[in-house]
Image: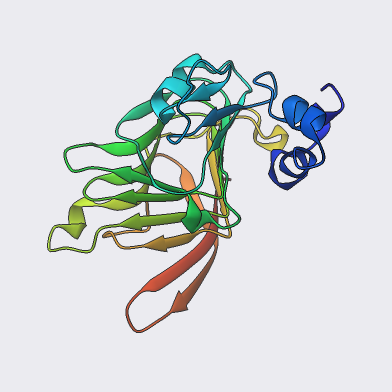
Length: 219
């Protein structure tokens, strides 16, 4: 288990679980990551939770939460106040979908350093991700706001952090880094305040949408 802890959750640690029953037990042990799986009937199994909110509450700082592919996971105003990594369990981000319903400010609200990978987050109104502080990394995701006459109220990423000038060269302070992520809908792709800046933007124009790949960093 100690050796497996050095492997990246996706795909390396995931693939080790396919070798045999013993490796599956070790690679899926809750000491290495927690699982959100709506299809699991026996929730007494350690490290398995029916929804994201309970998994986040039970997680320890630094834990990885694997969100099972298939179906819809509800995520409304879930505050994450400790360093966590949330990863979709499918081969592609559109296989693991988080839905934020109307009346919610955001699907996920980050108040600590976190990573989001291989997930699709959809918001009907409001924003998909609300970043308040810490270093947020978004890798290989799809962020989608509902297209409607009220889409000016929606924004895939909102950051209210102000950044930090104290240790910019050492990577400290507030920061949002986005890579290989598709953004659809909303009045703006990213809304920031303070001194966070949008950098290295690549926009692909289509007839029906604009696709953004970019990094947002504090400079």
